[in-house]
Length: 452
Image (cartoon, rainbow, N blue to C red):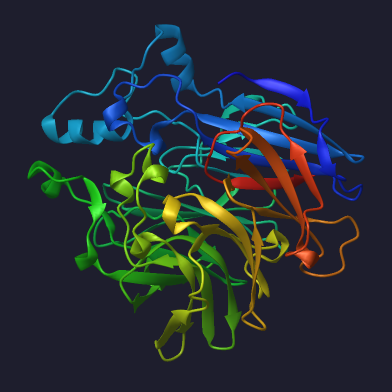
């Protein structure tokens, strides 16, 4: 896909004057594919799509994350890494490319911390990205102190300015946790004991704690040697939530057994008396390791689709209370007003699955934790969205005083757009539909970086 910088001139509605900053969405856009049959969506090269808002106007730009791996493949003129398919090579004894076993694709998510935007892939260090032009500054290892892979979902505490991150691995130590201070320095790192390696896509924080998700997507060399998948769903591994003090160590983690399930994304967590409250999107199981680029065209299995859920972990008694917050909708990509990360929030925003279209999203949701009500902003027939992020209005005075922004693909018109919803009038007409001059393919996670 080509790279562009283009003013957005076609607008239905009006771009708010009190919206200033950049809406960003990252995803996999493969330049070289070794085998279409074995291509996995996790394999694509990272590309960031951005809409910059200023003085009631918008500019669209997109750019590949200029990773070392992509540069090497472009220089060769073909692929070097096989992506997820190369996991099987470990078992077969096939030597890795001279450049290393895996490519840092930087294609999954982004985080903004210490005035720096990072593009993330959870098996490798983050890439620092320059705003607003999206130029890649290169891999960032925090002065060489980053000694482990870097999750796609670190959590930033807006009150302290600290960022909590972790990395998982198929090999011991299976999990390592770090705290980055407000100045961008790693000030705490500790390994955490796990029974085996698991894919841990997200975490949660509260004012004083960090919460880890031990879910049944496991790495298993023996399983792979027997002809199975090295990364696969293993319900026998159970599901646990681990709670540790923010600057704690391995021996401080308290593990709580919960009902077997899969959680890719939490929305938020906070402390409520003796309890740690965790909310997110929970599904009964997952076959993510078998996903293909055409997963959106396959018939959906609803037990693999998430629903809003809550766990309450009593730090005094060890008791767990858990249950659904809403069962009327399947959803994921849960987001909040990020300024309140780790503190109690009332509102959660999510993208609603259309079960008839697999992994596609046909509406945006707003959940009210005080009333249990869900508001639905339907996108319309043949229109599909993605992760929506909350952007504060200038001079905001309440938690939901702002906008929810996302990309939408209108297959009726063959047109991409940037959708702006008033978070306080969620089911009302969009504030603006901004026609994007170039196609924005479906991707992964989105972010908002305010101006200044």
